[in-house]
Length: 268
Ligand SMILES: C[S@@+](CC[C@H](N)C(=O)[O-])C[C@H]1O[C@@H](n2cnc3c(N)ncnc32)[C@H](O)[C@@H]1O
Image (cartoon, rainbow, N blue to C red; front, side, top):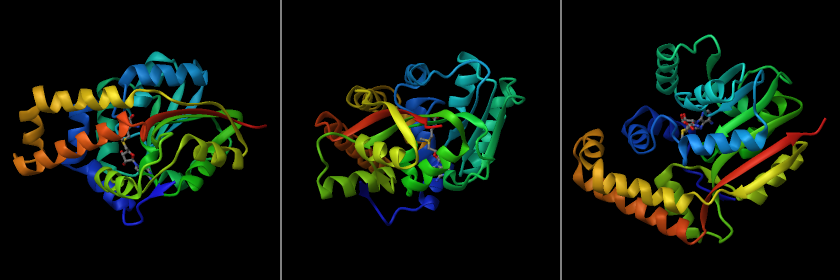
């Protein structure tokens, strides 16, 4: 595990209530994760998510993942948990615009203590967000608690790859991204096992390098004005952000950071 003790949930909430969060949405779209719809389809397929099921999206942001699941996988109902109030307001508005309020519910809470009932859900879902949660053990314990027996945890996350980050690289990466900690696939696997789950899928999606290049292309070749507008036309800040994104691309190309994908089943 690589961690940055100085980063707290309040830092993450500041990101997703402000310009940085809007910048990520400009580059990634409503689904703020690598690979957008294709990534969600792939994860849902591997996890066997389908009609009639009830799920929870941990770190749902504006709920685009949940809208995907009810629209394309015909999931009966979804509950989204997120700690950033403005994100949930945006999510409720978007659900109303899309006529989905009856099937989606938003809860403002830390995913480590969601307050949701035990053993009621077929699956817990997460897309590229658990890297923002400091205590991964509590996160996995909470996800497992919510599941029915044989329920599934299905998530993608920004993880450390098979080539280890140096201490300097890790501290620069975590500080830029506001990640309090990141795990490897094996470290997640160990936590899942500890909580009584068995991993069915645990792999590198291989998306990181090409998507990092895509975001850089967008920001450098097409959306430069829009990005600058979001950050108050601060060109020095823009230069710094682009520099850090090139740094991320280098780490991804070296196999040091990945988008990991895991599907695990709760043992009955
Ligand atoms: C990258 S966005 C999530 C993107 C979303 N999964 C998607 O695919 O569109 C990260 C979200 O995680 C939320 N978050 C981070 N730490 C959290 C925590 N401990 N509890 C609840 N939400 C958290 C943030 O508020 C933010 O909305």
